[in-house]
Image (cartoon, rainbow, N blue to C red; front, side):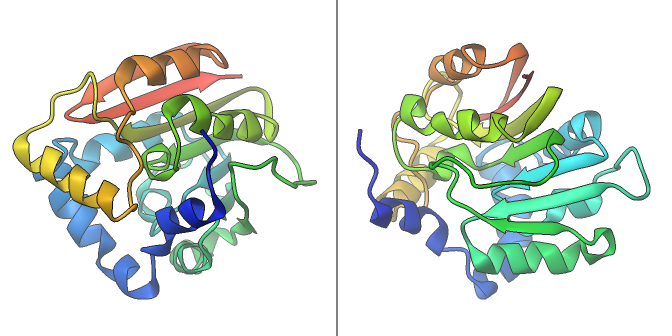
Length: 219
């Protein structure tokens, strides 16, 4: 499947200064608990178990999890990567105490990067916003793995349509988001995700929570 620049732009264009200001309340406060059935606390716990003191977050949203998680150091190296300049600015300001590095990149393409590599990479709620099939969008993992140290861990979560329970509200809202091209997960399913991870990573774990899959694996 060929992904156009227009499709790539559409998946992140919704994240403006105004929508980011409401994101925590709408998505993390309401949708996660009542629609996706994956309480935000579960995602934060996932960060707390896996984040390192040398971390890159990709698809940064509002920076909520980096602001709330417990880094194993009081002075972690934290980097942010996103195609959306507003999201980068919002998250960077929120975690300014860590003096984050920021990189504006399209992860569907090989990533230009000449800095030190990372021990953990977080891709929370990223894959379901990337256009393409689960197989084609998983090239994102290949591009990010080039930025990882040996035995580094990549972890995150994504909302699926197949192989997970979805209530009628989740089905309806996913349809709306896919029609608006905010989401691109019409064909994303649990087995496809497991296969994509298993082909690239060691020690893969995938936990289903509502219609979300929380995953991790090492290079």
